[in-house]
Length: 304
Image (tube, rainbow, N blue to C red; front, top):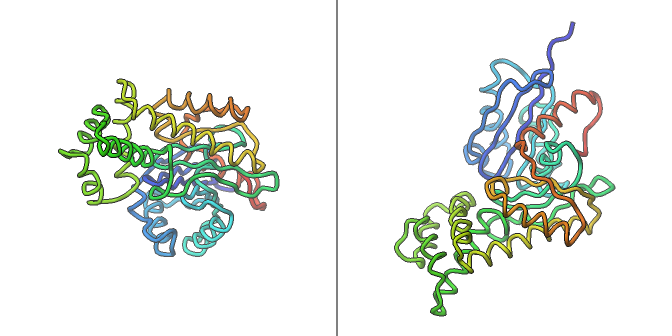
């Protein structure tokens, strides 16, 4: 009589890495760590060894037969293949690596376009040939507009530019200064340079939504432009062969339902696609895909 089958789903986000170990499809443990606790060199051998140690420490002697990992930052098939090969070599796991955004569709019980607005932002899908396509996801230094880091970066630029021409938006400036714990908005760059990261920027995003609701025109402009940009991410992958519906998730969408509704409305108006807010965390999608690998034992599972 064969023993139980253990499957492991891992979601590597920009801020947090979370995993679920399931026994015969039933979750048995759920754990998370900061991604910076192990990923330091873009999925290097050392990174893979560190994650394996962290994850294995929670297994209590159980060994997963199937592993699926959603990898933040792997935005094309070549990067996914390299990451998968490295993890196979360094961990000994039978692992399939997908882009972390792809987990949303799996968690949402379907296939389509995944749209994330969390610490960062990206739209991801597969074309009819099974190739990964994406829009956005450039990283917090260059893009991620509509994600938390991008929103704060844009809001700071908007507020500083308004002060430069002598027409400050007092609500936005004061909210950002309070959130950043600075006495002048000009000190924002120095404050953020102390420990620069996407997460250090993104945690100030709630201040933008608060003052937009209170009537700040500059904050409202930041959010309107972000919503438009996120909708156009969906349009970018749709034009390249991706089909709907759209499965949306991430901390910004989850904590700001009105913002999600705004983005959803734009997606429907511009591209005729329906967007669903996925309530289950992406790691649930990873767990489902890992379980599916067991069901498809002996086959390579390529398309989530």
